[in-house]
Amino acid sequence: MMTKEQIAHDLAMVYMYNRYGITVKGDVARGWGEIETKHFPSSTKFQYEEVELESRDIWGFNKTEKVEKGRKVDAIFQKMVADYQYAYQYFYDLIRNS
Image 1 (spheres, rainbow, N blue to C red):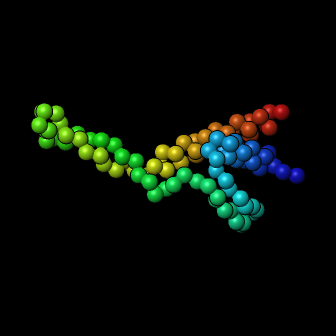
Image 2 (cartoon, rainbow, N blue to C red):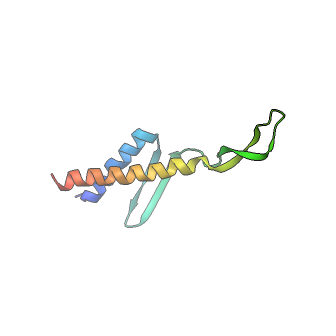
Image 3 (cartoon, rainbow, N blue to C red):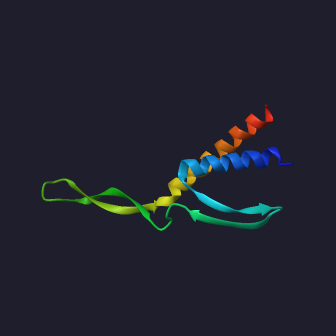
């Protein structure tokens, strides 16, 4: 028989798949197993932000330059983790209280 925790995890993963298009296949039991990720946002792309420089252009406005803000996947992954935790807790509470 599946535990309430496992059911909540499985439902949360279905939610994550539908929301983000993540495709994960595999099985883990007692800390051992294999997981294969088929689709995940690229971790090699950077996000950029514009910062003002002290120098000015010919019209007197401060010049700007694009600088690396971090990897694009960082913000996406942080949101995904928060969404998973919320979904897991939501489904676990539904199962526990029913």
